[in-house]
Image (tube, rainbow, N blue to C red; front, side, top):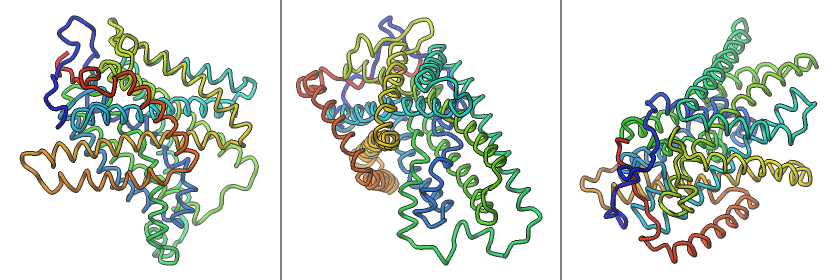
Length: 456
Protein backbone atom coordinates (compact mmCIF):
# COMPACT_ATOMS: atom_id res chain seq x y z
CA UNK A 1 0.00 0.00 0.00
CA UNK A 2 2.34 2.66 -1.28
CA UNK A 3 0.08 5.53 -0.35
CA UNK A 4 -1.63 4.01 2.67
CA UNK A 5 0.27 6.20 5.10
CA UNK A 6 -0.96 9.43 3.55
CA UNK A 7 -3.12 11.66 5.68
CA UNK A 8 -6.80 10.85 5.25
CA UNK A 9 -8.17 14.33 5.41
CA UNK A 10 -9.64 17.02 3.22
CA UNK A 11 -10.73 20.57 3.05
CA UNK A 12 -13.42 19.96 5.63
CA UNK A 13 -12.31 21.51 8.83
CA UNK A 14 -10.22 24.16 7.08
CA UNK A 15 -13.12 26.52 6.52
CA UNK A 16 -13.56 25.79 2.81
CA UNK A 17 -16.78 24.51 1.24
CA UNK A 18 -17.31 20.78 0.73
CA UNK A 19 -19.77 18.63 -1.17
CA UNK A 20 -23.11 18.05 0.55
CA UNK A 21 -24.00 14.55 1.81
CA UNK A 22 -27.64 14.27 0.81
CA UNK A 23 -28.05 11.23 -1.49
CA UNK A 24 -29.69 8.09 -0.12
CA UNK A 25 -29.30 4.58 -1.50
CA UNK A 26 -32.16 4.86 -3.99
CA UNK A 27 -30.95 8.26 -5.20
CA UNK A 28 -27.62 6.61 -6.06
CA UNK A 29 -29.28 3.64 -7.75
CA UNK A 30 -31.54 5.81 -9.90
CA UNK A 31 -28.71 8.11 -10.96
CA UNK A 32 -26.65 5.05 -11.93
CA UNK A 33 -29.53 3.52 -13.90
CA UNK A 34 -30.19 6.76 -15.76
CA UNK A 35 -26.51 7.13 -16.72
CA UNK A 36 -26.46 3.56 -18.05
CA UNK A 37 -30.01 3.95 -19.50
CA UNK A 38 -32.74 1.33 -18.88
CA UNK A 39 -33.03 1.17 -22.68
CA UNK A 40 -29.28 0.49 -23.12
CA UNK A 41 -29.62 -2.76 -25.16
CA UNK A 42 -31.68 -1.06 -27.89
CA UNK A 43 -28.70 0.59 -29.53
CA UNK A 44 -26.53 -2.52 -29.76
CA UNK A 45 -29.17 -5.26 -30.00
CA UNK A 46 -28.50 -5.97 -33.67
CA UNK A 47 -24.72 -6.16 -33.22
CA UNK A 48 -25.01 -8.59 -30.30
CA UNK A 49 -27.56 -10.71 -32.18
CA UNK A 50 -25.31 -11.02 -35.23
CA UNK A 51 -22.22 -11.92 -33.22
CA UNK A 52 -24.01 -14.33 -30.83
CA UNK A 53 -26.16 -15.88 -33.60
CA UNK A 54 -29.37 -14.80 -31.90
CA UNK A 55 -28.39 -15.56 -28.29
CA UNK A 56 -28.72 -11.96 -27.11
CA UNK A 57 -30.25 -12.84 -23.72
CA UNK A 58 -27.48 -15.30 -22.93
CA UNK A 59 -24.80 -12.76 -23.89
CA UNK A 60 -26.43 -10.01 -21.79
CA UNK A 61 -26.63 -12.24 -18.69
CA UNK A 62 -23.06 -13.53 -19.04
CA UNK A 63 -21.88 -9.93 -19.46
CA UNK A 64 -23.76 -9.01 -16.28
CA UNK A 65 -21.82 -11.61 -14.32
CA UNK A 66 -18.57 -10.35 -15.82
CA UNK A 67 -19.31 -6.71 -14.98
CA UNK A 68 -20.53 -7.59 -11.49
CA UNK A 69 -16.96 -8.63 -10.66
CA UNK A 70 -15.71 -5.12 -11.39
CA UNK A 71 -18.75 -3.56 -9.70
CA UNK A 72 -17.89 -5.47 -6.52
CA UNK A 73 -14.30 -4.22 -6.70
CA UNK A 74 -15.58 -0.63 -7.06
CA UNK A 75 -17.91 -1.02 -4.10
CA UNK A 76 -15.28 -2.61 -1.87
CA UNK A 77 -12.74 0.11 -2.64
CA UNK A 78 -15.38 2.79 -1.96
CA UNK A 79 -15.71 1.30 1.52
CA UNK A 80 -12.05 2.03 2.12
CA UNK A 81 -11.86 5.37 0.27
CA UNK A 82 -15.28 7.09 -0.01
CA UNK A 83 -13.93 9.82 -2.31
CA UNK A 84 -15.23 11.68 -5.37
CA UNK A 85 -11.91 10.79 -6.98
CA UNK A 86 -13.14 7.20 -7.42
CA UNK A 87 -10.60 5.03 -9.28
CA UNK A 88 -8.08 7.89 -9.27
CA UNK A 89 -8.03 7.75 -5.46
CA UNK A 90 -8.23 3.96 -5.13
CA UNK A 91 -5.26 3.29 -7.40
CA UNK A 92 -3.24 6.25 -6.17
CA UNK A 93 -3.64 5.18 -2.54
CA UNK A 94 -3.07 1.47 -3.04
CA UNK A 95 -0.51 1.19 -5.84
CA UNK A 96 1.35 4.38 -6.77
CA UNK A 97 0.64 8.05 -7.37
CA UNK A 98 1.68 7.76 -11.04
CA UNK A 99 -0.70 4.83 -11.57
CA UNK A 100 -3.49 6.77 -9.86
CA UNK A 101 -2.95 9.74 -12.15
CA UNK A 102 -2.88 7.54 -15.27
CA UNK A 103 -6.14 5.84 -14.30
CA UNK A 104 -7.68 9.21 -13.43
CA UNK A 105 -6.65 10.67 -16.78
CA UNK A 106 -8.21 7.69 -18.57
CA UNK A 107 -11.41 8.28 -16.60
CA UNK A 108 -11.40 11.94 -17.66
CA UNK A 109 -11.51 10.78 -21.28
CA UNK A 110 -14.47 8.53 -20.53
CA UNK A 111 -16.35 11.12 -18.46
CA UNK A 112 -15.84 13.95 -20.95
CA UNK A 113 -16.82 11.92 -24.00
CA UNK A 114 -20.06 10.58 -22.50
CA UNK A 115 -21.79 14.00 -22.15
CA UNK A 116 -20.38 14.98 -25.56
CA UNK A 117 -21.80 11.91 -27.34
CA UNK A 118 -25.13 12.20 -25.51
CA UNK A 119 -25.39 15.87 -26.52
CA UNK A 120 -24.70 14.96 -30.15
CA UNK A 121 -27.20 12.08 -30.10
CA UNK A 122 -29.92 14.22 -28.51
CA UNK A 123 -29.42 16.86 -31.20
CA UNK A 124 -29.80 14.27 -33.95
CA UNK A 125 -32.89 12.76 -32.30
CA UNK A 126 -34.47 16.17 -31.78
CA UNK A 127 -33.96 16.98 -35.47
CA UNK A 128 -36.10 13.96 -36.32
CA UNK A 129 -38.94 15.57 -34.36
CA UNK A 130 -38.34 19.26 -35.17
CA UNK A 131 -36.15 19.39 -38.29
CA UNK A 132 -36.48 23.16 -38.58
CA UNK A 133 -33.61 23.80 -36.14
CA UNK A 134 -30.07 22.96 -37.17
CA UNK A 135 -27.85 20.45 -35.42
CA UNK A 136 -25.61 23.21 -34.06
CA UNK A 137 -28.53 25.01 -32.43
CA UNK A 138 -29.70 21.79 -30.82
CA UNK A 139 -26.30 20.93 -29.31
CA UNK A 140 -26.20 24.35 -27.65
CA UNK A 141 -29.75 23.86 -26.31
CA UNK A 142 -29.06 20.41 -24.84
CA UNK A 143 -25.61 21.21 -23.43
CA UNK A 144 -27.02 24.38 -21.83
CA UNK A 145 -29.94 22.43 -20.35
CA UNK A 146 -27.70 19.70 -18.93
CA UNK A 147 -25.42 22.33 -17.42
CA UNK A 148 -28.29 24.35 -15.95
CA UNK A 149 -29.77 21.28 -14.26
CA UNK A 150 -26.45 20.27 -12.71
CA UNK A 151 -25.81 23.82 -11.51
CA UNK A 152 -29.07 23.73 -9.55
CA UNK A 153 -27.57 21.36 -7.00
CA UNK A 154 -27.34 17.63 -6.37
CA UNK A 155 -30.92 17.22 -5.09
CA UNK A 156 -32.38 18.90 -8.19
CA UNK A 157 -30.31 16.57 -10.38
CA UNK A 158 -31.47 13.57 -8.35
CA UNK A 159 -35.16 14.52 -8.61
CA UNK A 160 -34.97 15.05 -12.37
CA UNK A 161 -33.18 11.72 -12.76
CA UNK A 162 -36.02 10.07 -10.86
CA UNK A 163 -38.53 11.50 -13.34
CA UNK A 164 -36.50 10.41 -16.36
CA UNK A 165 -36.00 6.94 -14.93
CA UNK A 166 -39.73 6.59 -14.29
CA UNK A 167 -40.47 7.67 -17.86
CA UNK A 168 -38.07 5.11 -19.33
CA UNK A 169 -39.47 2.34 -17.12
CA UNK A 170 -42.99 3.19 -18.33
CA UNK A 171 -41.80 2.86 -21.93
CA UNK A 172 -40.27 -0.53 -21.15
CA UNK A 173 -43.47 -1.69 -19.44
CA UNK A 174 -45.57 -0.58 -22.44
CA UNK A 175 -43.18 -2.41 -24.75
CA UNK A 176 -43.48 -5.59 -22.69
CA UNK A 177 -47.26 -5.23 -22.66
CA UNK A 178 -47.29 -5.05 -26.46
CA UNK A 179 -45.12 -8.16 -26.65
CA UNK A 180 -47.43 -10.12 -24.35
CA UNK A 181 -50.46 -9.01 -26.37
CA UNK A 182 -48.75 -10.04 -29.62
CA UNK A 183 -47.88 -13.51 -28.35
CA UNK A 184 -50.96 -14.23 -26.25
CA UNK A 185 -53.22 -15.82 -28.88
CA UNK A 186 -50.51 -17.42 -31.00
CA UNK A 187 -49.68 -21.11 -30.65
CA UNK A 188 -45.97 -21.86 -30.30
CA UNK A 189 -43.90 -25.02 -30.20
CA UNK A 190 -42.55 -26.15 -26.78
CA UNK A 191 -39.05 -24.75 -27.41
CA UNK A 192 -40.23 -21.30 -28.48
CA UNK A 193 -39.82 -19.66 -25.07
CA UNK A 194 -36.41 -21.22 -24.33
CA UNK A 195 -34.82 -20.70 -27.75
CA UNK A 196 -33.62 -17.12 -26.98
CA UNK A 197 -31.47 -18.64 -24.21
CA UNK A 198 -30.31 -21.70 -26.11
CA UNK A 199 -30.90 -22.68 -29.71
CA UNK A 200 -29.02 -25.93 -30.50
CA UNK A 201 -29.00 -25.12 -34.21
CA UNK A 202 -27.00 -21.90 -33.83
CA UNK A 203 -25.32 -22.17 -30.42
CA UNK A 204 -21.53 -22.07 -30.42
CA UNK A 205 -19.26 -21.02 -27.52
CA UNK A 206 -17.10 -18.75 -29.70
CA UNK A 207 -20.11 -16.82 -30.98
CA UNK A 208 -21.48 -16.46 -27.46
CA UNK A 209 -18.15 -15.06 -26.32
CA UNK A 210 -18.07 -12.64 -29.26
CA UNK A 211 -21.57 -11.44 -28.40
CA UNK A 212 -20.69 -11.08 -24.72
CA UNK A 213 -17.70 -8.86 -25.56
CA UNK A 214 -20.18 -6.39 -27.09
CA UNK A 215 -22.93 -6.94 -24.50
CA UNK A 216 -20.68 -5.67 -21.68
CA UNK A 217 -21.05 -2.20 -23.21
CA UNK A 218 -24.65 -2.27 -21.93
CA UNK A 219 -23.26 -1.74 -18.42
CA UNK A 220 -20.82 1.12 -19.09
CA UNK A 221 -21.53 3.90 -16.59
CA UNK A 222 -22.18 1.95 -13.37
CA UNK A 223 -18.85 3.21 -12.03
CA UNK A 224 -20.16 6.78 -11.99
CA UNK A 225 -21.92 5.97 -8.71
CA UNK A 226 -18.55 5.91 -6.96
CA UNK A 227 -17.85 9.55 -7.91
CA UNK A 228 -20.82 10.52 -5.70
CA UNK A 229 -19.19 9.07 -2.57
CA UNK A 230 -18.81 12.48 -0.94
CA UNK A 231 -22.49 13.31 -1.49
CA UNK A 232 -23.82 9.93 -0.31
CA UNK A 233 -25.21 9.18 3.11
CA UNK A 234 -23.29 6.32 4.74
CA UNK A 235 -21.01 5.96 1.68
CA UNK A 236 -19.09 2.93 2.96
CA UNK A 237 -22.34 0.93 2.83
CA UNK A 238 -24.42 2.64 0.16
CA UNK A 239 -21.83 3.00 -2.60
CA UNK A 240 -21.12 -0.74 -2.54
CA UNK A 241 -24.83 -1.62 -2.55
CA UNK A 242 -25.71 0.95 -5.21
CA UNK A 243 -22.88 -0.02 -7.57
CA UNK A 244 -23.70 -3.73 -7.44
CA UNK A 245 -27.48 -3.18 -7.60
CA UNK A 246 -27.20 -0.84 -10.59
CA UNK A 247 -25.26 -3.51 -12.45
CA UNK A 248 -27.68 -6.26 -11.37
CA UNK A 249 -30.87 -4.31 -12.14
CA UNK A 250 -29.49 -3.27 -15.53
CA UNK A 251 -28.69 -6.88 -16.36
CA UNK A 252 -32.10 -8.23 -15.35
CA UNK A 253 -34.01 -5.42 -17.06
CA UNK A 254 -31.89 -5.63 -20.22
CA UNK A 255 -32.29 -9.42 -20.27
CA UNK A 256 -36.08 -9.09 -20.10
CA UNK A 257 -36.10 -6.47 -22.88
CA UNK A 258 -34.01 -8.46 -25.33
CA UNK A 259 -35.83 -11.70 -24.46
CA UNK A 260 -39.13 -10.06 -25.35
CA UNK A 261 -37.63 -8.59 -28.51
CA UNK A 262 -36.33 -11.97 -29.62
CA UNK A 263 -39.71 -13.61 -29.06
CA UNK A 264 -41.44 -11.05 -31.26
CA UNK A 265 -38.81 -10.74 -33.95
CA UNK A 266 -38.54 -14.50 -34.11
CA UNK A 267 -42.26 -14.88 -34.85
CA UNK A 268 -43.28 -11.72 -36.63
CA UNK A 269 -41.42 -9.39 -39.00
CA UNK A 270 -41.04 -5.66 -38.49
CA UNK A 271 -43.98 -3.59 -39.80
CA UNK A 272 -43.72 -3.13 -43.56
CA UNK A 273 -46.55 -0.60 -43.67
CA UNK A 274 -45.05 2.92 -44.00
CA UNK A 275 -47.40 4.41 -41.39
CA UNK A 276 -46.60 1.71 -38.85
CA UNK A 277 -42.88 1.95 -39.57
CA UNK A 278 -42.91 5.75 -39.16
CA UNK A 279 -44.81 5.46 -35.88
CA UNK A 280 -42.41 2.81 -34.57
CA UNK A 281 -39.44 4.96 -35.58
CA UNK A 282 -40.78 8.01 -33.72
CA UNK A 283 -41.53 5.98 -30.58
CA UNK A 284 -38.02 4.54 -30.53
CA UNK A 285 -36.50 7.91 -31.42
CA UNK A 286 -38.31 9.69 -28.57
CA UNK A 287 -37.42 6.93 -26.09
CA UNK A 288 -33.74 7.10 -26.96
CA UNK A 289 -33.86 10.91 -26.82
CA UNK A 290 -35.15 10.81 -23.24
CA UNK A 291 -32.65 8.09 -22.32
CA UNK A 292 -29.70 10.06 -23.68
CA UNK A 293 -30.88 13.24 -21.97
CA UNK A 294 -30.74 11.42 -18.66
CA UNK A 295 -27.39 9.84 -19.46
CA UNK A 296 -25.95 13.18 -20.59
CA UNK A 297 -27.00 14.96 -17.41
CA UNK A 298 -25.87 12.12 -15.17
CA UNK A 299 -22.49 11.73 -16.83
CA UNK A 300 -21.89 15.48 -16.62
CA UNK A 301 -22.76 15.29 -12.92
CA UNK A 302 -20.21 12.49 -12.43
CA UNK A 303 -17.56 14.20 -14.57
CA UNK A 304 -17.74 17.30 -12.39
CA UNK A 305 -17.10 15.22 -9.27
CA UNK A 306 -14.19 13.31 -10.82
CA UNK A 307 -12.52 16.54 -11.94
CA UNK A 308 -13.07 17.93 -8.45
CA UNK A 309 -11.39 14.91 -6.86
CA UNK A 310 -8.40 15.24 -9.19
CA UNK A 311 -8.25 19.02 -8.76
CA UNK A 312 -8.33 18.73 -4.98
CA UNK A 313 -5.46 16.27 -5.23
CA UNK A 314 -3.50 18.73 -7.38
CA UNK A 315 -3.42 16.38 -10.37
CA UNK A 316 -5.24 19.21 -12.20
CA UNK A 317 -5.02 22.96 -11.43
CA UNK A 318 -6.48 23.13 -7.92
CA UNK A 319 -7.70 26.73 -7.97
CA UNK A 320 -10.11 25.93 -10.81
CA UNK A 321 -10.94 22.21 -10.61
CA UNK A 322 -10.71 21.84 -6.84
CA UNK A 323 -13.12 24.68 -6.06
CA UNK A 324 -16.61 24.23 -4.57
CA UNK A 325 -19.36 26.83 -5.00
CA UNK A 326 -20.30 27.51 -1.35
CA UNK A 327 -24.06 28.13 -1.66
CA UNK A 328 -25.11 25.03 -3.60
CA UNK A 329 -21.95 23.10 -2.65
CA UNK A 330 -21.20 21.85 -6.15
CA UNK A 331 -18.05 21.94 -8.33
CA UNK A 332 -19.49 24.72 -10.49
CA UNK A 333 -16.36 25.39 -12.55
CA UNK A 334 -16.15 21.75 -13.59
CA UNK A 335 -19.83 21.51 -14.54
CA UNK A 336 -19.53 24.57 -16.80
CA UNK A 337 -16.26 23.32 -18.30
CA UNK A 338 -17.79 19.93 -19.15
CA UNK A 339 -20.79 21.67 -20.76
CA UNK A 340 -18.56 23.86 -22.92
CA UNK A 341 -16.47 20.86 -23.89
CA UNK A 342 -19.64 18.98 -24.90
CA UNK A 343 -20.75 21.81 -27.21
CA UNK A 344 -17.34 22.20 -28.83
CA UNK A 345 -16.76 18.45 -29.08
CA UNK A 346 -20.21 17.71 -30.52
CA UNK A 347 -19.62 20.37 -33.17
CA UNK A 348 -16.21 18.95 -34.07
CA UNK A 349 -17.65 15.40 -34.09
CA UNK A 350 -20.28 16.43 -36.63
CA UNK A 351 -17.63 18.12 -38.78
CA UNK A 352 -15.55 14.95 -38.99
CA UNK A 353 -18.59 12.71 -39.25
CA UNK A 354 -19.69 14.46 -42.43
CA UNK A 355 -16.30 13.52 -43.90
CA UNK A 356 -16.09 9.98 -42.49
CA UNK A 357 -19.65 8.90 -43.28
CA UNK A 358 -20.75 8.75 -39.64
CA UNK A 359 -17.70 6.80 -38.52
CA UNK A 360 -16.59 9.57 -36.17
CA UNK A 361 -19.48 8.82 -33.80
CA UNK A 362 -18.55 5.13 -33.61
CA UNK A 363 -14.90 5.99 -32.97
CA UNK A 364 -15.94 8.46 -30.25
CA UNK A 365 -18.09 5.83 -28.53
CA UNK A 366 -15.28 3.26 -28.58
CA UNK A 367 -12.78 5.85 -27.33
CA UNK A 368 -15.12 6.37 -24.37
CA UNK A 369 -14.78 2.66 -23.63
CA UNK A 370 -10.98 2.98 -23.86
CA UNK A 371 -10.94 5.22 -20.79
CA UNK A 372 -13.64 3.27 -18.98
CA UNK A 373 -11.81 -0.05 -19.16
CA UNK A 374 -8.53 1.51 -18.04
CA UNK A 375 -10.38 2.57 -14.90
CA UNK A 376 -11.99 -0.86 -14.52
CA UNK A 377 -8.62 -2.60 -14.70
CA UNK A 378 -7.12 -0.10 -12.27
CA UNK A 379 -9.85 -0.62 -9.68
CA UNK A 380 -9.56 -4.40 -9.89
CA UNK A 381 -5.80 -4.09 -9.42
CA UNK A 382 -6.34 -1.81 -6.40
CA UNK A 383 -8.85 -4.25 -4.87
CA UNK A 384 -6.40 -7.13 -5.36
CA UNK A 385 -3.64 -5.11 -3.69
CA UNK A 386 -5.73 -4.01 -0.72
CA UNK A 387 -7.70 -7.15 0.06
CA UNK A 388 -5.38 -9.96 -1.09
CA UNK A 389 -1.81 -8.72 -1.34
CA UNK A 390 -1.88 -6.78 1.94
CA UNK A 391 -5.13 -8.06 3.46
CA UNK A 392 -5.13 -9.41 6.98
CA UNK A 393 -7.89 -11.99 6.52
CA UNK A 394 -7.58 -13.18 2.94
CA UNK A 395 -10.48 -15.03 1.36
CA UNK A 396 -10.58 -16.79 -1.99
CA UNK A 397 -13.05 -14.15 -3.25
CA UNK A 398 -10.44 -11.47 -2.50
CA UNK A 399 -8.28 -13.12 -5.15
CA UNK A 400 -10.79 -14.38 -7.71
CA UNK A 401 -13.08 -11.33 -8.00
CA UNK A 402 -10.43 -8.72 -8.88
CA UNK A 403 -8.26 -11.06 -10.93
CA UNK A 404 -11.13 -12.31 -13.09
CA UNK A 405 -12.49 -8.76 -13.35
CA UNK A 406 -9.09 -7.49 -14.50
CA UNK A 407 -8.65 -10.26 -17.09
CA UNK A 408 -12.13 -9.76 -18.59
CA UNK A 409 -11.74 -5.98 -18.79
CA UNK A 410 -8.22 -6.28 -20.19
CA UNK A 411 -9.36 -8.64 -22.94
CA UNK A 412 -12.16 -6.28 -24.00
CA UNK A 413 -9.84 -3.27 -23.83
CA UNK A 414 -7.21 -4.69 -26.20
CA UNK A 415 -9.93 -5.72 -28.66
CA UNK A 416 -11.33 -2.24 -29.16
CA UNK A 417 -11.14 -0.89 -32.70
CA UNK A 418 -7.80 0.33 -33.99
CA UNK A 419 -8.93 3.98 -34.40
CA UNK A 420 -10.22 4.00 -30.79
CA UNK A 421 -6.95 2.55 -29.52
CA UNK A 422 -4.95 5.14 -31.46
CA UNK A 423 -7.12 8.02 -30.24
CA UNK A 424 -7.00 6.73 -26.67
CA UNK A 425 -3.23 6.30 -26.80
CA UNK A 426 -2.77 9.88 -28.02
CA UNK A 427 -4.98 11.10 -25.15
CA UNK A 428 -2.98 9.11 -22.61
CA UNK A 429 0.39 10.30 -23.96
CA UNK A 430 -0.75 13.92 -23.70
CA UNK A 431 -2.03 13.39 -20.17
CA UNK A 432 0.99 11.49 -18.92
CA UNK A 433 3.33 14.11 -20.39
CA UNK A 434 1.36 16.90 -18.71
CA UNK A 435 1.21 15.01 -15.40
CA UNK A 436 4.92 14.24 -15.42
CA UNK A 437 5.80 17.90 -15.95
CA UNK A 438 3.23 19.20 -13.47
CA UNK A 439 4.24 16.86 -10.63
CA UNK A 440 7.96 16.70 -11.51
CA UNK A 441 7.83 12.95 -11.95
CA UNK A 442 4.66 12.24 -9.89
CA UNK A 443 6.26 13.09 -6.57
CA UNK A 444 3.86 12.17 -3.79
CA UNK A 445 4.15 15.54 -2.07
CA UNK A 446 2.85 17.29 -5.21
CA UNK A 447 -0.14 15.04 -6.00
CA UNK A 448 -2.35 13.65 -3.25
CA UNK A 449 -5.29 11.27 -2.91
CA UNK A 450 -6.86 12.58 0.26
CA UNK A 451 -10.20 11.22 1.44
CA UNK A 452 -12.62 13.61 3.17
CA UNK A 453 -14.31 12.79 6.49
CA UNK A 454 -17.71 11.14 6.14
CA UNK A 455 -19.47 13.88 8.08
CA UNK A 456 -19.45 17.20 6.23
